[in-house]
Image 1 (cartoon, one colour):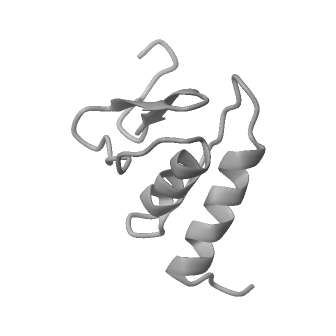
Image 2: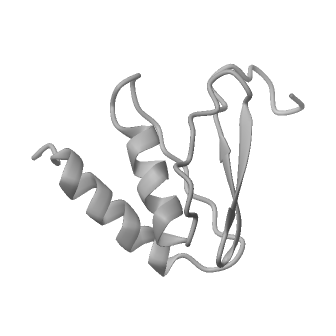
Length: 84
């Protein structure tokens, strides 16, 4: 397995964002520092979000307005049960 550079990760994320349709859900899993927020920022750019998507580590959910609709960035690592 080859590790992507940050530029490659960003390009792939933007490509994914451009390909997503309404109501799509993308689930990213990885250790801290693995590049999840970098990927989310790139996907959001591909979806037309102009401001940098911020990490919701302390807020749990961030909503970003994009040209193709709202993008919700959730950080679910603290959730313990489905009802949370």
